[in-house]
Image (cartoon, one colour):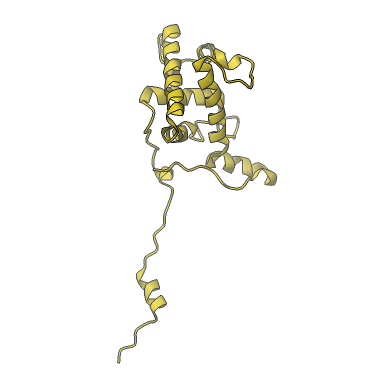
Length: 173
């Protein structure tokens, strides 16, 4: 009579182990919500709002614009409209004032277009649609950056108290 291995031993022999990884670790994230000019404007805005500082990654290194492309694409319609209109307004203002897209402006030119950011903050939402967008975008870029894997990895190496919970966002494809 032929002896068969016990069921758990049989399963262990037949089941291959498959290593998994995060898709974004091996490939670039593909924009789904914003148009190419809108995403370029968001990338430039993100870099201006939160640039890299020494070894600390900025919004671009943390891929905050790509995350926001996903997040806003899954948001309610009014939030989608706020972002699309705001990014289009940045591009329109840059073209009107300097004859080029917002993403192509140097720091001084971009600062002039971002004048609403220099206004005093109040609890009431700004009446100007561009100012309302910039206020939301500033908060979102900061949140997406400091909650990214790139930010947490660098900041947690500096101090044991800065390690956080190890929880950060991952784009979902």
